[in-house]
Image (tube, rainbow, N blue to C red; front, side, top):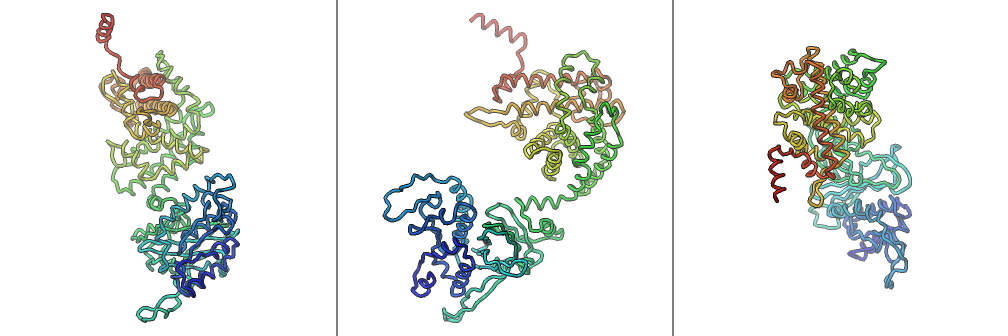
Length: 626
Protein backbone atom coordinates (compact mmCIF):
# COMPACT_ATOMS: atom_id res chain seq x y z
CA UNK A 1 0.00 0.00 0.00
CA UNK A 2 2.83 2.41 0.88
CA UNK A 3 4.43 1.71 -2.50
CA UNK A 4 1.16 2.54 -4.25
CA UNK A 5 0.94 5.91 -2.52
CA UNK A 6 4.45 6.83 -3.62
CA UNK A 7 4.66 5.23 -7.08
CA UNK A 8 1.13 5.83 -8.34
CA UNK A 9 -0.10 8.84 -6.39
CA UNK A 10 3.31 10.50 -6.19
CA UNK A 11 3.09 11.31 -2.46
CA UNK A 12 6.26 12.88 -1.09
CA UNK A 13 6.07 11.26 2.40
CA UNK A 14 4.24 8.10 3.42
CA UNK A 15 3.87 6.60 6.88
CA UNK A 16 5.42 3.14 6.51
CA UNK A 17 3.21 0.97 8.74
CA UNK A 18 4.73 -2.15 7.12
CA UNK A 19 7.95 -1.38 9.01
CA UNK A 20 6.17 -1.52 12.38
CA UNK A 21 3.77 -4.41 11.70
CA UNK A 22 6.04 -6.80 9.82
CA UNK A 23 9.02 -6.40 12.14
CA UNK A 24 6.77 -6.71 15.20
CA UNK A 25 5.31 -9.98 13.85
CA UNK A 26 8.76 -11.08 12.64
CA UNK A 27 7.49 -11.34 9.09
CA UNK A 28 11.05 -10.68 8.05
CA UNK A 29 10.88 -12.30 4.62
CA UNK A 30 7.91 -10.13 3.71
CA UNK A 31 9.63 -6.95 4.77
CA UNK A 32 12.85 -7.90 2.96
CA UNK A 33 10.77 -8.46 -0.17
CA UNK A 34 9.17 -5.04 0.39
CA UNK A 35 12.61 -3.42 0.42
CA UNK A 36 13.74 -5.49 -2.59
CA UNK A 37 10.66 -4.58 -4.62
CA UNK A 38 11.14 -0.93 -3.76
CA UNK A 39 14.81 -0.72 -4.79
CA UNK A 40 14.12 -2.74 -7.94
CA UNK A 41 11.55 -0.09 -8.94
CA UNK A 42 13.46 2.97 -7.72
CA UNK A 43 15.73 3.22 -4.63
CA UNK A 44 14.72 6.88 -4.27
CA UNK A 45 11.30 5.71 -3.02
CA UNK A 46 12.94 4.49 0.22
CA UNK A 47 13.72 8.11 1.11
CA UNK A 48 10.00 8.93 1.15
CA UNK A 49 9.06 6.39 3.82
CA UNK A 50 8.48 7.53 7.38
CA UNK A 51 9.50 4.55 9.51
CA UNK A 52 7.97 4.30 12.97
CA UNK A 53 7.31 1.82 15.78
CA UNK A 54 4.09 3.31 17.14
CA UNK A 55 1.62 6.16 16.58
CA UNK A 56 -1.53 7.45 18.35
CA UNK A 57 -3.67 4.85 16.52
CA UNK A 58 -1.51 1.88 17.54
CA UNK A 59 -0.33 0.25 20.75
CA UNK A 60 2.72 1.83 22.34
CA UNK A 61 6.19 0.74 21.21
CA UNK A 62 6.95 -0.96 24.52
CA UNK A 63 3.68 -2.91 24.33
CA UNK A 64 4.48 -4.10 20.81
CA UNK A 65 8.25 -4.65 20.97
CA UNK A 66 9.08 -4.90 24.68
CA UNK A 67 12.11 -3.19 26.20
CA UNK A 68 14.89 -5.67 25.31
CA UNK A 69 17.09 -6.48 22.36
CA UNK A 70 14.18 -6.86 19.92
CA UNK A 71 12.97 -3.34 20.61
CA UNK A 72 16.46 -1.86 20.25
CA UNK A 73 17.23 -3.93 17.16
CA UNK A 74 14.14 -2.60 15.37
CA UNK A 75 14.80 0.92 16.67
CA UNK A 76 18.36 0.66 15.38
CA UNK A 77 16.97 -0.29 11.94
CA UNK A 78 14.60 2.67 12.09
CA UNK A 79 17.47 5.16 12.50
CA UNK A 80 19.87 3.48 10.03
CA UNK A 81 17.49 2.90 7.10
CA UNK A 82 16.91 5.52 4.39
CA UNK A 83 13.77 7.54 4.97
CA UNK A 84 12.61 9.50 7.99
CA UNK A 85 12.71 7.88 11.48
CA UNK A 86 9.83 8.92 13.73
CA UNK A 87 9.65 8.33 17.48
CA UNK A 88 6.22 8.07 19.06
CA UNK A 89 5.11 10.00 22.13
CA UNK A 90 6.50 8.37 25.28
CA UNK A 91 8.47 5.78 23.29
CA UNK A 92 11.87 6.69 24.67
CA UNK A 93 10.58 6.92 28.26
CA UNK A 94 8.85 3.52 27.95
CA UNK A 95 5.32 4.83 28.62
CA UNK A 96 2.57 2.25 28.16
CA UNK A 97 -0.44 4.58 27.98
CA UNK A 98 -1.73 5.31 24.48
CA UNK A 99 -2.02 9.00 23.67
CA UNK A 100 -4.61 10.22 21.19
CA UNK A 101 -5.31 13.62 19.72
CA UNK A 102 -8.25 14.04 22.12
CA UNK A 103 -6.10 13.53 25.23
CA UNK A 104 -5.61 16.59 27.39
CA UNK A 105 -3.66 14.74 30.08
CA UNK A 106 -2.33 11.32 30.97
CA UNK A 107 -4.51 8.97 32.99
CA UNK A 108 -1.75 6.64 34.17
CA UNK A 109 0.84 7.71 36.75
CA UNK A 110 3.97 6.56 34.85
CA UNK A 111 7.60 7.34 35.55
CA UNK A 112 10.26 7.40 32.81
CA UNK A 113 12.15 4.10 32.47
CA UNK A 114 15.72 5.17 33.23
CA UNK A 115 17.19 1.97 31.76
CA UNK A 116 15.44 2.63 28.44
CA UNK A 117 16.51 6.27 28.37
CA UNK A 118 20.15 5.44 29.07
CA UNK A 119 20.25 2.67 26.47
CA UNK A 120 18.70 5.02 23.92
CA UNK A 121 21.39 7.56 24.72
CA UNK A 122 24.12 4.95 24.38
CA UNK A 123 22.97 3.07 21.27
CA UNK A 124 20.35 5.10 19.41
CA UNK A 125 20.91 8.80 19.95
CA UNK A 126 24.59 8.46 19.07
CA UNK A 127 23.59 6.82 15.78
CA UNK A 128 21.22 9.69 15.02
CA UNK A 129 24.24 11.99 14.85
CA UNK A 130 25.28 9.95 11.79
CA UNK A 131 21.96 10.21 9.90
CA UNK A 132 23.83 11.77 6.98
CA UNK A 133 25.54 8.39 6.55
CA UNK A 134 22.30 6.39 6.51
CA UNK A 135 19.71 8.72 4.96
CA UNK A 136 20.78 8.51 1.31
CA UNK A 137 20.00 5.77 -1.24
CA UNK A 138 22.66 6.30 -3.87
CA UNK A 139 25.00 3.86 -2.11
CA UNK A 140 22.41 1.84 -0.18
CA UNK A 141 22.82 -1.93 -0.72
CA UNK A 142 20.70 -4.73 0.75
CA UNK A 143 22.40 -8.14 1.10
CA UNK A 144 21.30 -11.74 1.40
CA UNK A 145 22.61 -13.65 4.40
CA UNK A 146 23.80 -17.09 3.27
CA UNK A 147 23.99 -19.81 5.93
CA UNK A 148 26.62 -22.60 5.80
CA UNK A 149 24.14 -24.92 4.01
CA UNK A 150 23.80 -22.41 1.16
CA UNK A 151 20.29 -21.16 1.98
CA UNK A 152 19.29 -17.55 2.62
CA UNK A 153 18.31 -16.67 6.19
CA UNK A 154 15.42 -14.27 5.63
CA UNK A 155 15.42 -13.29 9.32
CA UNK A 156 18.66 -11.34 8.94
CA UNK A 157 18.62 -7.78 7.64
CA UNK A 158 22.00 -6.77 6.24
CA UNK A 159 22.66 -3.52 4.40
CA UNK A 160 25.45 -1.05 3.77
CA UNK A 161 25.59 2.63 2.96
CA UNK A 162 28.19 5.28 2.23
CA UNK A 163 28.59 9.03 2.41
CA UNK A 164 31.72 10.45 0.79
CA UNK A 165 34.57 8.47 2.41
CA UNK A 166 32.49 7.13 5.32
CA UNK A 167 31.09 3.61 5.26
CA UNK A 168 28.60 1.65 7.35
CA UNK A 169 27.42 -1.96 7.44
CA UNK A 170 24.35 -2.93 9.50
CA UNK A 171 23.17 -6.45 10.43
CA UNK A 172 20.16 -7.39 12.58
CA UNK A 173 18.75 -10.84 13.40
CA UNK A 174 15.04 -10.33 14.08
CA UNK A 175 14.09 -13.71 15.56
CA UNK A 176 14.72 -15.80 18.66
CA UNK A 177 17.45 -18.02 17.19
CA UNK A 178 21.21 -18.19 16.74
CA UNK A 179 22.66 -17.93 13.25
CA UNK A 180 25.93 -17.79 11.35
CA UNK A 181 26.56 -17.03 7.71
CA UNK A 182 28.11 -14.87 5.01
CA UNK A 183 27.20 -11.48 3.57
CA UNK A 184 28.46 -10.99 0.04
CA UNK A 185 25.98 -10.50 -2.81
CA UNK A 186 23.57 -7.59 -2.80
CA UNK A 187 19.94 -7.72 -3.84
CA UNK A 188 19.22 -6.29 -7.30
CA UNK A 189 18.51 -2.58 -7.45
CA UNK A 190 17.50 -0.24 -10.25
CA UNK A 191 20.22 1.87 -11.79
CA UNK A 192 19.35 4.63 -14.23
CA UNK A 193 21.22 4.47 -17.52
CA UNK A 194 23.43 7.50 -17.97
CA UNK A 195 23.18 9.47 -21.19
CA UNK A 196 19.96 7.84 -22.29
CA UNK A 197 17.93 11.01 -21.98
CA UNK A 198 15.12 8.86 -20.65
CA UNK A 199 14.60 8.90 -16.91
CA UNK A 200 12.52 5.70 -17.01
CA UNK A 201 15.21 3.59 -18.71
CA UNK A 202 16.91 1.52 -16.04
CA UNK A 203 18.76 -1.71 -15.45
CA UNK A 204 18.96 -4.07 -12.49
CA UNK A 205 22.40 -4.29 -10.88
CA UNK A 206 23.91 -6.48 -8.18
CA UNK A 207 27.16 -5.72 -6.37
CA UNK A 208 29.31 -7.66 -3.94
CA UNK A 209 30.17 -6.40 -0.47
CA UNK A 210 33.60 -5.17 -1.54
CA UNK A 211 32.01 -2.97 -4.18
CA UNK A 212 29.22 -1.88 -1.87
CA UNK A 213 31.77 -0.63 0.67
CA UNK A 214 34.07 0.72 -2.07
CA UNK A 215 37.09 -1.27 -0.84
CA UNK A 216 40.26 -1.78 -2.88
CA UNK A 217 40.40 -5.21 -4.52
CA UNK A 218 43.97 -5.82 -3.40
CA UNK A 219 45.47 -8.45 -1.12
CA UNK A 220 47.86 -5.90 0.41
CA UNK A 221 45.02 -3.75 1.78
CA UNK A 222 43.05 -4.32 4.96
CA UNK A 223 40.01 -2.55 6.34
CA UNK A 224 39.68 -1.80 10.03
CA UNK A 225 36.24 -0.97 11.41
CA UNK A 226 34.38 -0.65 14.71
CA UNK A 227 31.10 -2.07 15.96
CA UNK A 228 29.18 0.96 17.22
CA UNK A 229 27.24 -1.17 19.72
CA UNK A 230 29.99 -3.20 21.43
CA UNK A 231 32.92 -0.86 20.78
CA UNK A 232 35.01 -3.75 19.43
CA UNK A 233 37.29 -3.19 16.44
CA UNK A 234 37.79 -5.69 13.61
CA UNK A 235 40.22 -6.19 10.75
CA UNK A 236 39.54 -7.91 7.42
CA UNK A 237 41.54 -8.37 4.25
CA UNK A 238 39.98 -6.31 1.44
CA UNK A 239 40.54 -8.94 -1.25
CA UNK A 240 38.92 -11.53 1.01
CA UNK A 241 35.82 -9.34 1.35
CA UNK A 242 35.63 -9.00 -2.42
CA UNK A 243 35.98 -12.75 -2.96
CA UNK A 244 34.12 -14.24 0.01
CA UNK A 245 32.24 -11.45 1.73
CA UNK A 246 32.10 -11.19 5.52
CA UNK A 247 31.30 -13.90 8.05
CA UNK A 248 28.80 -12.86 10.74
CA UNK A 249 27.54 -14.62 13.88
CA UNK A 250 24.42 -13.34 15.63
CA UNK A 251 22.37 -14.48 18.61
CA UNK A 252 18.64 -13.85 19.01
CA UNK A 253 17.64 -10.24 18.25
CA UNK A 254 21.29 -9.15 18.19
CA UNK A 255 22.61 -6.47 15.89
CA UNK A 256 25.87 -4.88 14.83
CA UNK A 257 26.51 -1.49 13.27
CA UNK A 258 29.97 -1.37 11.71
CA UNK A 259 31.31 2.17 11.22
CA UNK A 260 34.61 4.10 11.19
CA UNK A 261 36.04 2.06 8.32
CA UNK A 262 39.62 2.89 7.48
CA UNK A 263 41.85 1.33 4.84
CA UNK A 264 45.47 0.41 5.65
CA UNK A 265 48.19 -0.98 3.40
CA UNK A 266 50.46 -3.76 4.59
CA UNK A 267 54.23 -3.57 4.19
CA UNK A 268 56.97 -6.15 3.82
CA UNK A 269 56.75 -7.06 7.51
CA UNK A 270 53.09 -8.07 6.96
CA UNK A 271 51.97 -7.04 10.45
CA UNK A 272 48.36 -6.45 9.39
CA UNK A 273 48.24 -9.86 7.73
CA UNK A 274 49.66 -11.52 10.85
CA UNK A 275 47.17 -9.70 13.07
CA UNK A 276 44.23 -10.60 10.82
CA UNK A 277 45.27 -14.26 10.82
CA UNK A 278 45.80 -14.28 14.57
CA UNK A 279 42.44 -12.67 15.40
CA UNK A 280 40.62 -14.90 12.88
CA UNK A 281 37.56 -12.66 12.84
CA UNK A 282 37.54 -11.80 16.56
CA UNK A 283 37.08 -8.23 17.69
CA UNK A 284 39.36 -6.34 20.06
CA UNK A 285 38.93 -3.03 21.85
CA UNK A 286 41.97 -1.46 20.23
CA UNK A 287 43.38 -2.66 16.91
CA UNK A 288 46.49 -0.47 17.21
CA UNK A 289 47.29 -2.03 20.58
CA UNK A 290 46.72 -5.50 19.18
CA UNK A 291 48.98 -4.65 16.24
CA UNK A 292 51.74 -3.59 18.61
CA UNK A 293 51.33 -6.87 20.49
CA UNK A 294 51.96 -8.71 17.24
CA UNK A 295 55.06 -6.58 16.68
CA UNK A 296 56.28 -7.33 20.22
CA UNK A 297 55.60 -11.08 20.08
CA UNK A 298 59.32 -12.06 20.03
CA UNK A 299 59.87 -10.20 23.32
CA UNK A 300 56.63 -11.44 24.88
CA UNK A 301 57.28 -15.09 23.97
CA UNK A 302 60.81 -14.89 25.38
CA UNK A 303 59.57 -13.28 28.60
CA UNK A 304 56.77 -15.84 29.02
CA UNK A 305 59.38 -18.60 28.85
CA UNK A 306 61.25 -17.24 31.86
CA UNK A 307 58.61 -15.38 33.87
CA UNK A 308 55.38 -17.29 34.16
CA UNK A 309 53.19 -18.63 36.93
CA UNK A 310 55.23 -21.86 37.06
CA UNK A 311 58.42 -19.86 37.63
CA UNK A 312 56.79 -17.75 40.34
CA UNK A 313 55.39 -20.83 42.09
CA UNK A 314 58.74 -22.56 41.87
CA UNK A 315 60.45 -19.58 43.51
CA UNK A 316 57.84 -19.48 46.27
CA UNK A 317 58.21 -23.20 46.92
CA UNK A 318 62.00 -22.92 47.21
CA UNK A 319 62.11 -20.11 49.74
CA UNK A 320 64.32 -20.88 52.72
CA UNK A 321 62.42 -22.71 55.48
CA UNK A 322 62.93 -25.39 58.11
CA UNK A 323 62.42 -27.99 55.39
CA UNK A 324 64.76 -26.13 52.98
CA UNK A 325 67.40 -24.39 55.14
CA UNK A 326 69.60 -23.57 52.14
CA UNK A 327 68.85 -21.84 48.84
CA UNK A 328 68.62 -24.34 45.98
CA UNK A 329 70.80 -22.68 43.35
CA UNK A 330 69.90 -25.25 40.68
CA UNK A 331 66.46 -23.69 40.41
CA UNK A 332 67.97 -20.22 40.13
CA UNK A 333 70.44 -21.33 37.45
CA UNK A 334 67.57 -22.58 35.28
CA UNK A 335 65.74 -19.29 35.70
CA UNK A 336 68.92 -17.33 35.02
CA UNK A 337 69.44 -19.16 31.71
CA UNK A 338 65.88 -18.47 30.52
CA UNK A 339 66.15 -14.85 31.68
CA UNK A 340 69.47 -14.55 29.80
CA UNK A 341 67.68 -15.77 26.65
CA UNK A 342 64.96 -13.17 27.16
CA UNK A 343 67.55 -10.39 27.51
CA UNK A 344 69.30 -11.58 24.34
CA UNK A 345 66.02 -11.56 22.45
CA UNK A 346 65.29 -8.03 23.69
CA UNK A 347 68.80 -6.93 22.78
CA UNK A 348 68.49 -8.27 19.22
CA UNK A 349 64.96 -6.89 18.88
CA UNK A 350 66.12 -3.37 19.75
CA UNK A 351 69.50 -3.83 18.01
CA UNK A 352 71.57 -2.75 21.02
CA UNK A 353 75.19 -3.79 21.65
CA UNK A 354 75.30 -3.84 25.47
CA UNK A 355 76.24 -7.04 27.28
CA UNK A 356 73.33 -8.83 28.92
CA UNK A 357 75.21 -11.32 31.11
CA UNK A 358 75.93 -8.78 33.91
CA UNK A 359 72.20 -8.02 34.14
CA UNK A 360 71.35 -11.75 34.31
CA UNK A 361 73.98 -12.22 37.03
CA UNK A 362 72.52 -9.38 39.09
CA UNK A 363 69.02 -10.85 38.83
CA UNK A 364 70.42 -14.24 39.87
CA UNK A 365 72.02 -12.74 43.00
CA UNK A 366 68.88 -10.81 43.88
CA UNK A 367 66.64 -13.87 43.51
CA UNK A 368 69.04 -15.74 45.77
CA UNK A 369 68.61 -13.07 48.45
CA UNK A 370 64.85 -12.97 47.88
CA UNK A 371 64.51 -16.68 48.68
CA UNK A 372 65.95 -15.99 52.14
CA UNK A 373 64.25 -12.61 52.63
CA UNK A 374 62.50 -13.33 55.91
CA UNK A 375 62.42 -11.31 59.15
CA UNK A 376 63.63 -14.22 61.30
CA UNK A 377 66.62 -14.82 59.00
CA UNK A 378 67.54 -11.13 58.94
CA UNK A 379 67.18 -11.00 62.72
CA UNK A 380 69.39 -14.08 63.19
CA UNK A 381 72.07 -12.90 60.79
CA UNK A 382 72.25 -9.21 61.70
CA UNK A 383 70.49 -9.10 65.06
CA UNK A 384 73.63 -8.70 67.18
CA UNK A 385 72.79 -5.00 67.16
CA UNK A 386 71.11 -3.72 70.30
CA UNK A 387 69.47 -0.91 68.33
CA UNK A 388 65.80 -0.56 69.18
CA UNK A 389 65.21 0.97 65.77
CA UNK A 390 66.58 -2.14 64.08
CA UNK A 391 64.34 -4.38 66.14
CA UNK A 392 61.34 -2.17 65.38
CA UNK A 393 62.30 -2.21 61.70
CA UNK A 394 62.34 -6.02 61.54
CA UNK A 395 59.03 -6.13 63.39
CA UNK A 396 57.58 -3.65 60.86
CA UNK A 397 58.80 -5.85 58.00
CA UNK A 398 56.24 -8.37 59.26
CA UNK A 399 56.24 -12.12 58.63
CA UNK A 400 52.64 -12.12 57.43
CA UNK A 401 53.39 -9.47 54.82
CA UNK A 402 56.40 -11.27 53.34
CA UNK A 403 54.81 -14.72 53.52
CA UNK A 404 51.82 -13.59 51.47
CA UNK A 405 51.97 -15.13 47.98
CA UNK A 406 50.83 -11.87 46.39
CA UNK A 407 53.67 -10.00 48.14
CA UNK A 408 56.18 -12.57 46.93
CA UNK A 409 54.80 -12.35 43.39
CA UNK A 410 55.24 -8.57 43.38
CA UNK A 411 58.79 -8.84 44.78
CA UNK A 412 59.88 -11.46 42.24
CA UNK A 413 58.36 -9.55 39.31
CA UNK A 414 60.02 -6.34 40.47
CA UNK A 415 63.39 -8.13 40.49
CA UNK A 416 62.81 -9.33 36.93
CA UNK A 417 62.01 -5.84 35.62
CA UNK A 418 63.93 -3.35 37.74
CA UNK A 419 67.20 -3.52 35.75
CA UNK A 420 65.80 -3.89 32.24
CA UNK A 421 66.76 -0.31 31.42
CA UNK A 422 70.44 -1.30 31.54
CA UNK A 423 69.97 -2.78 28.06
CA UNK A 424 70.04 0.80 26.76
CA UNK A 425 71.24 3.17 29.43
CA UNK A 426 73.38 2.11 32.38
CA UNK A 427 73.29 5.54 34.00
CA UNK A 428 69.58 6.29 33.57
CA UNK A 429 68.43 2.67 33.66
CA UNK A 430 65.65 3.36 36.18
CA UNK A 431 63.79 5.76 33.89
CA UNK A 432 64.43 3.55 30.86
CA UNK A 433 63.27 0.44 32.69
CA UNK A 434 60.02 2.06 33.76
CA UNK A 435 59.36 3.21 30.20
CA UNK A 436 59.94 -0.28 28.81
CA UNK A 437 57.07 -1.70 30.87
CA UNK A 438 54.74 0.51 28.85
CA UNK A 439 56.55 0.53 25.51
CA UNK A 440 56.91 -3.27 25.42
CA UNK A 441 53.41 -3.74 26.89
CA UNK A 442 54.87 -5.92 29.65
CA UNK A 443 51.94 -4.99 31.88
CA UNK A 444 49.84 -7.57 30.04
CA UNK A 445 52.24 -10.36 31.02
CA UNK A 446 52.53 -9.13 34.59
CA UNK A 447 48.77 -8.96 35.07
CA UNK A 448 48.23 -12.32 33.39
CA UNK A 449 50.71 -13.92 35.80
CA UNK A 450 49.01 -12.37 38.79
CA UNK A 451 45.60 -13.57 37.65
CA UNK A 452 47.01 -17.07 37.32
CA UNK A 453 48.32 -16.74 40.88
CA UNK A 454 44.71 -16.26 41.97
CA UNK A 455 44.44 -12.49 42.04
CA UNK A 456 41.26 -10.76 40.90
CA UNK A 457 41.31 -8.19 38.07
CA UNK A 458 41.46 -5.35 40.61
CA UNK A 459 44.22 -7.04 42.64
CA UNK A 460 46.26 -7.67 39.48
CA UNK A 461 45.91 -4.06 38.40
CA UNK A 462 46.81 -2.82 41.89
CA UNK A 463 49.88 -5.08 42.04
CA UNK A 464 51.01 -3.82 38.63
CA UNK A 465 50.76 -0.23 39.90
CA UNK A 466 52.97 -1.13 42.85
CA UNK A 467 55.60 -2.73 40.58
CA UNK A 468 55.69 0.34 38.34
CA UNK A 469 56.21 2.60 41.35
CA UNK A 470 58.90 0.36 42.82
CA UNK A 471 60.79 0.35 39.51
CA UNK A 472 60.58 4.16 39.32
CA UNK A 473 61.49 4.70 42.99
CA UNK A 474 63.90 1.84 43.64
CA UNK A 475 66.55 4.35 44.72
CA UNK A 476 64.18 6.45 46.80
CA UNK A 477 66.55 6.65 49.79
CA UNK A 478 69.46 7.83 47.63
CA UNK A 479 70.12 11.35 48.92
CA UNK A 480 73.32 13.21 49.73
CA UNK A 481 71.74 16.28 51.30
CA UNK A 482 71.85 17.30 54.96
CA UNK A 483 70.06 15.13 57.48
CA UNK A 484 67.91 18.07 58.56
CA UNK A 485 64.64 17.96 56.64
CA UNK A 486 65.61 14.74 54.87
CA UNK A 487 62.29 12.98 55.55
CA UNK A 488 60.32 15.84 54.00
CA UNK A 489 62.59 16.11 50.95
CA UNK A 490 62.38 12.39 50.23
CA UNK A 491 58.61 12.32 50.52
CA UNK A 492 58.20 15.51 48.46
CA UNK A 493 60.17 13.93 45.62
CA UNK A 494 57.84 10.94 45.68
CA UNK A 495 54.79 13.19 45.65
CA UNK A 496 56.13 15.14 42.67
CA UNK A 497 55.71 12.00 40.57
CA UNK A 498 52.25 12.01 38.86
CA UNK A 499 52.16 8.20 38.96
CA UNK A 500 52.84 8.26 42.71
CA UNK A 501 50.08 10.84 43.15
CA UNK A 502 47.69 8.68 41.14
CA UNK A 503 48.40 5.64 43.32
CA UNK A 504 47.76 7.67 46.47
CA UNK A 505 44.53 8.98 44.97
CA UNK A 506 45.68 12.57 45.38
CA UNK A 507 42.82 14.87 44.46
CA UNK A 508 41.80 18.44 45.02
CA UNK A 509 38.49 19.18 46.70
CA UNK A 510 37.38 22.50 48.09
CA UNK A 511 40.86 23.91 47.50
CA UNK A 512 42.60 21.16 49.52
CA UNK A 513 44.78 18.28 48.28
CA UNK A 514 43.70 14.95 49.77
CA UNK A 515 45.27 11.48 49.68
CA UNK A 516 44.25 7.93 50.51
CA UNK A 517 45.51 6.71 53.90
CA UNK A 518 45.52 2.98 53.07
CA UNK A 519 47.38 3.52 49.79
CA UNK A 520 49.97 5.62 51.63
CA UNK A 521 50.54 2.92 54.22
CA UNK A 522 50.89 0.26 51.54
CA UNK A 523 53.42 2.06 49.38
CA UNK A 524 55.47 3.19 52.38
CA UNK A 525 55.68 -0.43 53.50
CA UNK A 526 56.87 -1.42 50.05
CA UNK A 527 59.46 1.38 49.88
CA UNK A 528 60.91 0.23 53.17
CA UNK A 529 60.84 -3.39 51.97
CA UNK A 530 62.80 -2.79 48.75
CA UNK A 531 65.37 -0.55 50.45
CA UNK A 532 65.95 -3.19 53.12
CA UNK A 533 66.18 -5.76 50.36
CA UNK A 534 68.82 -3.71 48.51
CA UNK A 535 70.86 -3.35 51.70
CA UNK A 536 70.88 -7.14 52.10
CA UNK A 537 71.74 -7.69 48.41
CA UNK A 538 74.75 -5.41 48.73
CA UNK A 539 75.78 -7.08 51.99
CA UNK A 540 75.58 -10.57 50.46
CA UNK A 541 77.53 -9.43 47.40
CA UNK A 542 80.21 -7.90 49.65
CA UNK A 543 80.55 -11.07 51.68
CA UNK A 544 80.72 -13.35 48.62
CA UNK A 545 82.96 -11.05 46.61
CA UNK A 546 80.33 -10.74 43.87
CA UNK A 547 80.22 -7.47 41.98
CA UNK A 548 76.76 -5.93 41.88
CA UNK A 549 75.68 -2.37 41.20
CA UNK A 550 73.60 -1.12 44.14
CA UNK A 551 70.48 0.82 43.22
CA UNK A 552 71.31 3.55 45.72
CA UNK A 553 75.09 3.42 45.78
CA UNK A 554 75.68 7.04 46.74
CA UNK A 555 73.24 6.95 49.59
CA UNK A 556 74.58 3.61 50.79
CA UNK A 557 78.17 4.77 51.00
CA UNK A 558 77.17 7.88 52.91
CA UNK A 559 74.92 5.94 55.25
CA UNK A 560 77.77 3.58 56.14
CA UNK A 561 80.13 6.48 56.63
CA UNK A 562 82.93 4.80 54.65
CA UNK A 563 85.35 6.54 52.32
CA UNK A 564 85.01 4.05 49.49
CA UNK A 565 82.34 1.85 48.03
CA UNK A 566 84.20 -1.41 48.78
CA UNK A 567 84.10 -1.71 52.53
CA UNK A 568 80.85 -0.13 53.68
CA UNK A 569 79.09 -3.48 54.19
CA UNK A 570 81.79 -5.28 56.17
CA UNK A 571 79.87 -6.02 59.34
CA UNK A 572 76.47 -7.08 60.61
CA UNK A 573 76.39 -4.00 62.82
CA UNK A 574 76.61 -1.67 59.85
CA UNK A 575 73.88 -3.53 57.97
CA UNK A 576 71.62 -3.24 61.01
CA UNK A 577 72.45 0.45 61.26
CA UNK A 578 71.46 1.11 57.65
CA UNK A 579 68.17 -0.74 58.04
CA UNK A 580 67.45 1.21 61.21
CA UNK A 581 68.19 4.52 59.46
CA UNK A 582 65.75 3.68 56.66
CA UNK A 583 63.13 2.72 59.19
CA UNK A 584 63.62 6.03 60.99
CA UNK A 585 62.57 7.83 57.79
CA UNK A 586 59.53 5.58 57.34
CA UNK A 587 58.59 5.98 61.00
CA UNK A 588 58.55 9.77 60.61
CA UNK A 589 56.32 9.46 57.52
CA UNK A 590 53.86 7.25 59.37
CA UNK A 591 53.76 9.62 62.36
CA UNK A 592 53.12 12.55 60.05
CA UNK A 593 50.27 10.60 58.46
CA UNK A 594 48.50 10.17 61.80
CA UNK A 595 47.92 13.89 62.27
CA UNK A 596 47.49 14.82 58.60
CA UNK A 597 43.73 14.22 58.36
CA UNK A 598 44.37 12.83 54.82
CA UNK A 599 45.61 16.24 53.64
CA UNK A 600 48.86 16.42 51.66
CA UNK A 601 49.82 19.85 53.04
CA UNK A 602 49.44 18.67 56.64
CA UNK A 603 51.35 15.49 55.87
CA UNK A 604 54.34 17.47 54.59
CA UNK A 605 53.88 20.14 57.23
CA UNK A 606 54.31 17.57 59.99
CA UNK A 607 57.73 16.73 58.50
CA UNK A 608 59.08 20.29 58.80
CA UNK A 609 62.53 20.26 60.27
CA UNK A 610 62.44 21.39 63.94
CA UNK A 611 63.98 24.76 64.71
CA UNK A 612 67.49 24.84 66.18
CA UNK A 613 68.05 25.39 69.89
CA UNK A 614 68.84 29.12 69.51
CA UNK A 615 65.80 29.72 67.32
CA UNK A 616 63.53 27.96 69.80
CA UNK A 617 64.98 30.04 72.64
CA UNK A 618 64.36 33.31 70.77
CA UNK A 619 60.76 32.31 69.99
CA UNK A 620 60.17 31.35 73.63
CA UNK A 621 61.56 34.65 74.96
CA UNK A 622 59.56 36.68 72.48
CA UNK A 623 56.41 34.84 73.48
CA UNK A 624 57.04 35.36 77.27
CA UNK A 625 57.85 39.06 76.86
CA UNK A 626 54.63 39.64 74.99
